[in-house]
Image (cartoon, rainbow, N blue to C red):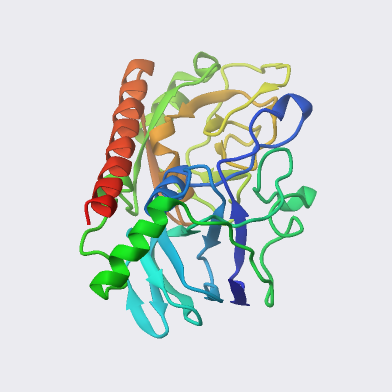
Length: 332
């Protein structure tokens, strides 16, 4: 693929740089891991393969395919066009050589994921292709895409080849079915985020605990890949608390001295010393990743068993999606 326009902030991301936090190396990876995985499934890739993460708080990218490709775009509700014709999201798309893909206005959400059959064939750094811009590692020279970049693409899988054969035989760009994206990623202006009790929940004032789980918090423009910064009723400790820095996770909700919550995301630090009021349930991390500045979040406390069951259900649905795609391709 040739980059005609890079967009505001477009990077190569996969499932992350796993296993190196003990050395102080950030995980990075896709902000919305679910949309990333589904994009890969739809193009016959391994779920962890590298894709383009496209931030849509400004003009989107324009990309030209130098040969026939199978792609899929998931995540935010955005308008995409292929050679000026509107194309659908959340399904495999057959793109002929010389065609240009452009990203238009974004209606809901703020991050899209473009997968291509074979994945983006860049050199892994510590077993991951993910871009971490601050350290300048991964992706294309550790930076966002720039005009003129040429993105190398790997060999498509047999499943991808079958999907291309199916679409070519029918003379179609895309199949007549689509992923139920409203189920997997229910985008909205005021999502309810499920949260497990944090390690330090009991250290916060009762009024603050009540406010956190009953009032809404607004996403601020200062949010980035490192953390989602919120503004609302300040969260206060019962008394001053001295903590030793300890490991943090994707979704840890820290409360700094100003009382305004920060939800740690893909480019989070490896350790943190602020008290944690909660941990976002894994299944709701995509909703945080897709929350635009100005969006209002409300939090609902759940138990570990409920969080695990929700994740088990989601993983079963992902396996079912993979099986259905194979059945569609190989039954043709």
